[in-house]
Length: 296
Image (cartoon, rainbow, N blue to C red):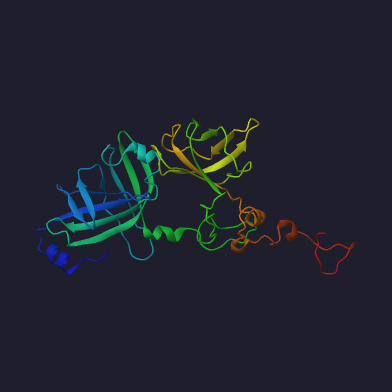
């Protein structure tokens, strides 16, 4: 946290015009600004609204690599943070920035917190959101795992496969919807049975636009219809007519990478690594012991 000389001089006067402001940037790109001042503020292209349903507790910060965490809390409202958006997961992992600012001269400000939203709980018309500092990421598992299956995510910078390639996705309207988790279509031609399993399911329009699910099952029925089942329900309502995009799924096997996606040059697994059966094997008196493979 670095204070400018102007802000330091203002704080040194003892009679200060200090307020707090914070901004939330959701993964869909929407930015919301809040302040505990009684009037709105504006800087960095963000409008910070007063009394808009959100405030924050004191931020506990430390030296070293300890995680700086705090909480934010407020009321649910239709104008700012809605219960529907929280249930839909639109705030999961959203970026959070907080400032101390001189409301009389907003050029005098300092960032006091930067991180992301963690667990969000709700109840009785209010919500509480955990704020996690940047050092939270240092506690995540790092490095590669030596495993026969690929460690990349289909379409990411390591995989490099273009998921929008023709033949690997389809955009269509929802037909029959059950609990925002089970979707039936009269026909989806040009794709083999189970083609979309483990693939991405994206809602393109309607109340759930922008939300993403993962496909658990993709089955072609005896009458030619197709049923798509998600691992978890989408957190907002999906109705017939809403536009959807289905992307091919990858089971991370070497054969799938080579035959289904023709992308084996970017395969990030170790398909020839010995398995557990090899680790517990031992030489025997009978048979050939010439140093070759123990498994014929």
